[in-house]
Image (cartoon, rainbow, N blue to C red; front, top):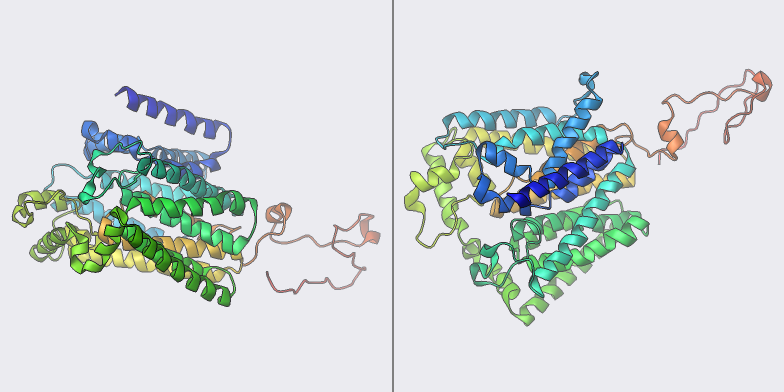
Length: 491
């Protein structure tokens, strides 16, 4: 337990430094970087378990989740005298609250011994998307968050390369010769597919930044290197679902990027050519990655163990079509009541398909609730995207929407939908852009002084009126003359 105590002490020291240095906005970048460190909570699985109170404690060994707790506490402390302003005026909150309530109620007809960790941590995620937008107010905050994604991608890609060659930091024995393949890089994530999921989200943001903002410090020193290293890192994960997610999310980001249409066509054509060339190179080199690429053409066989997991989940749903077997009860029901569905060669009993998990655990009622939340998120993304003409805000909104679609897509083969912490981080960013006064408008403040100025600008008085000079850029008006109004279109 000594190593875990050291990790907790370091987490507390870093979070305290952020808070006491009066930079609480750095908590959100800390969440971005800290969530990648699944090493500690995974290593403590045997000692603390995956459910109950000890499971919740184990989850907080992740620095990102600890930073989420700090975010909630800081915002509550800041607004303790005006709690009415705590909840953002977002259309997403009510559906999310309803879904969370259904997940909690679903424990009532679950026969598992303890609630799963995904439900125990759910109140933290919900509280985070309510409070985090208070710390995401302007473009500078969004750029800090983007920089945190890029820094994490660079570090994780270097670790992933080191795991493959020269072969260090192999901290999960289950990944050695997994599925008869060489070690699949996972860096500090618990699973290579989780690493691939993060790299896709970050690489698509990096590509969008380069396209939409041009040569700036953020793009030259962070975005471009993170994309280059991430491209190598995602290959070393051996994640077929991650590769497919990259194509999907990358296409949507290019499609929604605030760039010329002919540029989008050229980029799409170039990307297709690059993918074809990379696949040809992998197949020519042979080895583990080539075998995984070839397996994509094998149809149903490509999903491997997921086939019997899907069949068992659908069996649970047919037996309980309306409300399912209860929240988090898939694995418990599988190993007890549906044990005959498990083949002798199976190595896992966790569901790898989120849609099947929803049907099996919550039935038709749960599926309809998930659809409602998905529709509301889609409407919010589209409305927020078209509400603003600021290119940077459109880029971020399009990237958030594309990443949410990608997470939903990859969860159909790797699981982790509501359990995915970056899903909740992206939702918090969406709510911040949707409701933030400096982010939801149609134009971007020209200067920091303008962003702090009141909505109604003061009228410049004539020099003869009180002997004061008019502000720079505002012509003094003659007494009795009509006030000039700037009718230029918004940028």
